[in-house]
Amino acid sequence: MKTSHQEASFDDEDYQDEEALIQEDASALLAGKNYDAVVTATDWTVETLISQLKKGNIKLDPSFQRRDAWTAKRKSEFIESLFLGLPVPQVVLAESKDRKGSYIVLDGKQRLLTLRQFSATSQDPEFKQLRLSGLALRSDLNGLSMVDAVQNFTIEDDLRFFENQTIRTVVLRNWPSEDYLYLVFLRLNSGSLPLSPQELRQVVSPGRFTDFATTFTSNSASVMGLFNSNQKPDFRMRDVELSIRYFGLVNYLEGYTGNLKLFLDETSQKLNVEWNNLEKEVIEQGFELENAIEFTWKLFSDDAFRKWNGKTFERRFNRAVFDVMVYFFREKNTRIKAMENNQAVIDAFKKLCDDSSSFRTSIETTTKSIGALSTRLQLWGQTLAKILNIEITTPTLDKTTGRINLSS
Image 1 (cartoon, rainbow, N blue to C red):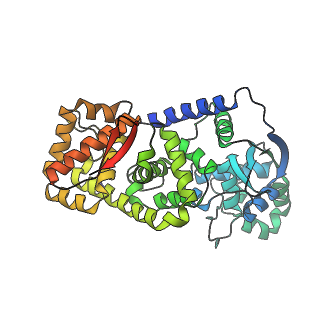
Image 2: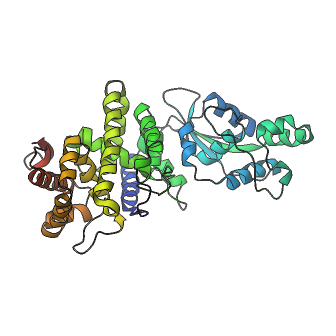
């Protein structure tokens, strides 16, 4: 388990590129078209929202609370604002196409999670109970959960006021497509910390694989350790996206077209649909991802998943290097042979970075193109096969079809 390696620095260029793609794709799709989407703005009471949350009518995956972006103090102040009757931001929901009367959250997930946690019991199996803390204006509420407040007759009137407090709730019905929701997401978050592409993907591609990917990374110290030394889930869900990237390469590499956003979307959608048939296989692939990560750390130590620049390994985590390492080191036999020849493997990677301009380009510029992906996988796979003297299935680019093929 990675516990003592240096903290990873990540380049979020991938996320900026994907956000631009989302904007372009959605705008192009919607341009010049009229849709029958219905937007209803109502004032739902706190009591109504809590009731809908507890009934499961507002989809709020319990695992999401492990990726809290809010501190306990910020949550407490939000609840305090409602007790004081202060205005709070609106909540935006989209009615589910699969189940009328149930909703997915477009904006306000942290606020809704806070309400759900505040209303939870200490024995709630899904949501951790929130007890208020750090309040100055209503310091008498410090230490209380909603369960405590219900039993405290001295604040009976306050609790009634709290439950009857309204929150503007915008409900989007009859929305035409996932791209439409993507565009709504971006417009809602314009000017603020943008949602990561994976946060959007969680909403528009729900299913058992999506749930698995979230839970898997939340429970995987190996994956979370790539992002922080405390092995905590990344609140922007970059750890989930990195895992889906791996599952996509392992299962659908030959279908990659150069559009990373589309590839990750389709990977999630396909595995959601095929989950009943592929569950055991994907779970096993998850174990192999963890093995590959831990092996790469063991082999390269603090230089794992970094690019060699001719003099030293760069400090920044490189997703393209991550691709090639976990793709090949997921195989147990490759790991065994590589550990027997550990220094040769390290030297070979440095030499490939030094001598091959094609490989360098594939891990430092236009890394998401089909040519870059096939090049780095092919060259590193062939290098490993040669120095380890074993057969390795190596992806290559078929120039006739423009598709990636797999061959030994």
